[in-house]
Picture 1 (cartoon, rainbow, N blue to C red):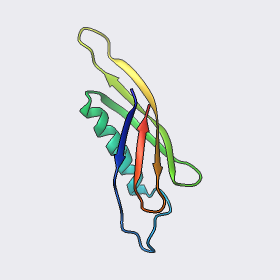
Picture 2: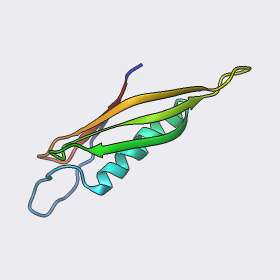
Picture 3: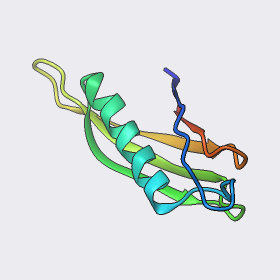
Picture 4: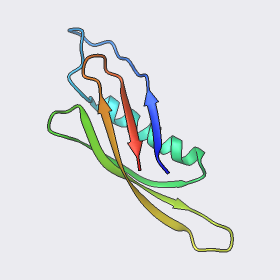
Length: 96
């Protein structure tokens, strides 16, 4: 299942525009991913996002666990990306 969440986070920047993901943006994206999967009943073990060279894209993964009645928990790792619009500071993330 494809999970997509569009975040309309706009930040006020000195100089009028963003040049990519700041530490605060990376932390917010990780928290958003964690909250989204927890709300769907998963236990989130780890969220890793690393900046790509142009700083407008993050890539990484989320490690999840899903407990099922009478069965061993299922462990899942999904690759994740986040892309920022460098003009206005909004971004979206996706984990497949």
